[in-house]
Structures are given as structure tokens and as C-alpha cells.
Image (cartoon, rainbow, N blue to C red; front, side):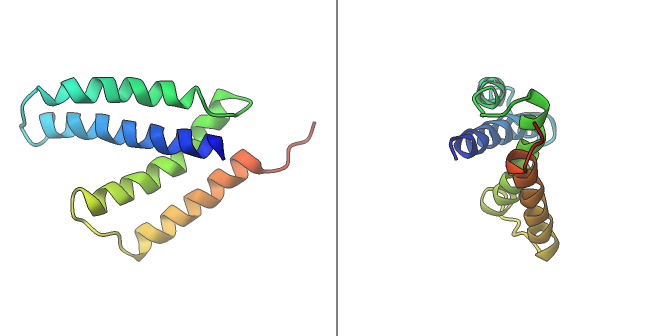
Length: 108
């Protein structure tokens, strides 16, 4: 479960970092947003190194679901765009896939 905390932290950092660039490039906001965005993306990359996984690729693959669900929640709470049933279903499917990647039985 420690890995889940790192995944959630990484997702928040990545979304904040990417959203800062979105504000700057897509919404013509001040480049000062990059002062928040760049360190947030560095924190994201650092956080993924803390995940308890045997291989980096496995950690990144499992993380994808957490990012997707985090992005759906970000859209709902920050951008005021509530998820529809397809967003919810897709997020749940991704979480199930992430659980298989992280905790599925492995042959030795």
C-alpha cells in the first residue's frame, strides 16, 4: 500500500506540472506558471522511483491507471467538468488493470 501513496503523489505532481504548461501554452497565462510546473514534474519523476516494483516499466504501467483516475478527478474538481459514466467505467477498468500489473501472481 506504500506504493499507492507514491502513485497518488506522483499523479498529483504530474497533473499540476502538466496543467501549469496547459495554462501557459493553451490559455495564454503567464510563463510564471512554469515556476510551479517544472518542479512539479521533477517531483513526479522522483516519486515514481519510490514505488515498490521489480522493474521500472511495471511501475510506470501500473501508475498509468492512477494518473487516469487522478486526471478525471482533476477535471471534476478543478475544471468543474464532472465525469460521465464512461469516464467512471474507464477509470475502474484502468484500476483493475493496474492491480493486475502490481499484484498479479508472478512465476519465479
